[in-house]
Image (cartoon, rainbow, N blue to C red):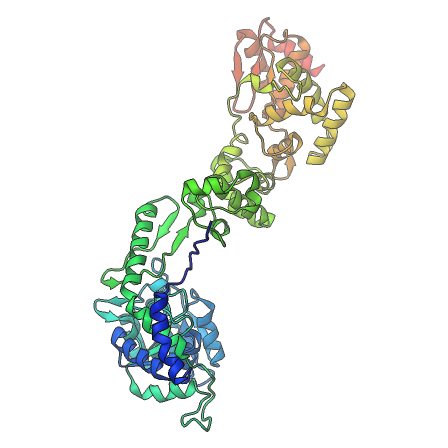
Length: 565
C-alpha cells in the first residue's frame, strides 16, 4: 500500500516542467539571475501586487537579507510562536530578538503588547502571519510609524493571502515569502522579499551575490543566496496552477472544519473576516483536560504514518502488532499511543497532569502523588482516571460474588476466613508501606497453607470494591490508607456476617473494633452502632463502615465489658 504523506508537495505535470526547462539546455544559463529568474520576478510582482520582488535560494536567506539593513546590536520585537528560522535570522544578523506575546485565537503577535517593549535600541518589528493568519497589520503599522520603526513580515505561510483586498506582500516595509516544497506555492527550495521601496533592490541583490554591487568588489557582508534557473522554472509552472492548489486545500480545510468543529477538547482557529485564505495550514489545539489525549500522543500516532480510511486501517494493522504499528483514527491504537506518552513522563509531571482528574472523585486528604504512582503504568487516558479511583472516598456498591474467583480458588466463605485472618495482621503492622503489607500477606498465606492469590484476592476486592484494580492488593491498601503521611487503615474491609456467621461475643468484639479502627469512632459510639445492628438484625451503616449482624439481644454494658476485657 502506497504512503500518502501529509506534507506531500504539489507538482506541475511532468511534460509542462520539461517544456519549461527545455531552453535552459540551449542557453546553458543555470543560475545567476537568468531568463527564468527574471520572468518569475515579473510574474510574482503581478501576483503579489507589489512594486519589487527579490528572489533567493530559500526563505531563510531572504529574511536574513531583509534584516541585514539594520545596524548590529539593534533590537527586533518579534513573536516566540514561530518556526526557529525567524529567531535565527534575527540573531545571525547580529540583532537581538525581543519576544512579544501572541493573541489567543490566531496565534499572531498581539499589537497591544508591543509598545511596552520598545526601547531606544529597537530598530524593527517582525510579526509572523503564522499558519497564514493575518496579523493586525494596520495597528502594527500605526505603532511602527509612531516610533519610527520598520516592519518586516515573516509571511512564509501567507503567499496569496489578502485582507479586504490588501495583499500580505504590502502590509509591511518588506515581506518575506518561503517557496519551500511544502508551501502552497513553491520552487522546490526558494523564497523572496516583496517591497515597494525600489531603493532597497540594489542592496538585496548585492547581499545575495557575496555583497558585491558591481560583481567584483564586496562592499557589504553578504552571501551566496541566488535562486537557480531550475527552481525559477518550477515556480513559473506552479504559479499557473496556484488557484487549483488553493482550491484543493480549501476543500480539505472545509472538510476538517465540518468534522472537527464543536468537538469537545478540540479547538480550531476561527476564520478571519475579510481575509482570502490560501488554506495552507489547519492548526488544531488539543485540550487534554477535556479530550483525554495530549498533543504529543496525537503526534505520535500521526508521525511518519500512512493515511487510510478507517476500514482499510483496521485491515492493515493487527492489534497484536500494535507496538510496532502506529495508527490513526483507530481508537484502541490511539489509546495505546497516549498510554506510551503518559508512561514516558516523569512521575512528577504525571502527578501534576493527573491531579485534577484524581480530585474529581477523590475529595479526601489523600496523598495524590501516591495515587498517581499507581495510575501511571495502568492509565491509557487521563479521562479514565476518575472511575479508576472512585473507591477512595466511598466504597462502590458491589456484588458479594466479586469474592468468587476460580483462578484464586475463592468464594465468599473462603474470603470471609481470609479477611478475618488478614485484619489482625494488618492492624499489627509497625509500618504501613507497600512492601510491609506485601510481605505480611505473603507470610500469612504461608501460615494458613494457602496460595498467595487466595489471600490477596479478597483483600483487593474488599479494599477497592472492584474486580479490576490499579495494582496489587498491597499497593492498593497502602495507597488508600495514606493520609498526609500517617498510616490510616481505610474502612472498606467489610464484616459481613449476615446468613454466613452466627453472631457471637467474639464477632461483636471484632465488629466494634473494626468500627473504632476503620471509621475512627469512639469506643462508645462503636458499641452503640454494633448494638443497634444486633438488636434490629439490619445493616447499620456509617459513612465509612458497614456492619451486618443478625440475631440476639445484647445491651451496651455487655458490649463495653467485652471490649474492655
